[in-house]
Length: 330
Image (cartoon, rainbow, N blue to C red; front, side, top):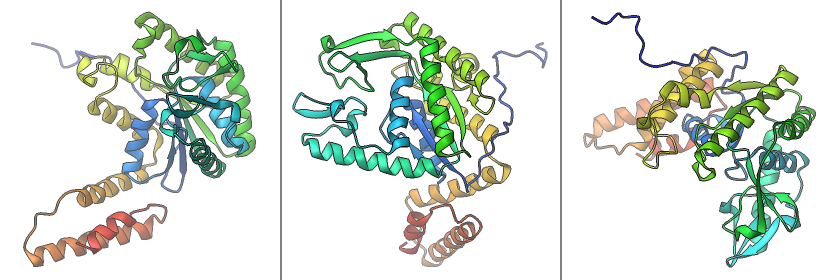
């Protein structure tokens, strides 16, 4: 008979942190696609959130460049623009910004910069997710790019960032963030998504460089935190059933598991209770109502509107206007 004490997996313990987030706080998230995964979970429960205003960014230098533009509230640099395959691209931005009309791209980018600057100036917490230490440098401008946009590879130089160069860039960014907003708390994460296009061994080297860089930044500044998303997936879950069909990105189950760890580590008890209430309202508004009995439908409508109004009175920062409209018009 097996003893109850036997364990068949290494569970990574994530304790409660001294960073505690409530609905009155604003959260800014930037980095790899893992950022989008967690950001989507927070948007679902209606936190005040801005996620990846420049689209998904993978390497530390490109994330730092994006934050510099946002901190300075600059216009999109003209030397970042490239015309290729009948589209205008910015080498600082994700392909979602690419346009046939250069002016449209620039206007869209400048609007994103201005909006992100306003949000970052008034935010409380910044989560930064590094994805890879491998970068591409555009040879014509000697600029590390956020996205190659499928431009011919011979126009780029590929190399891996060094630990100290990442630390140097990010110490300056952390200082600038604190000057912009001295109430900011910064948390780093390392994306558990593997960059197998770089090669399996190269991916491991890349992740190691990023981990060491983050560790140095934390040693240099005790106010900087780290959330072990990488360890949770690779040491705790550690199984292909927690991956999507491409065997690279995470499954919904894995994302849910990591998010639960984040929720318990970073969110106040009251926020966690409110999350469940908001989730129930949002889910109710997303489900097709099959109730045909007018009295029961009226009772459902009245009950949901009362819940929304009560929650809004207690938590004025939560935007449930879409759900309120849905049940009013039901």
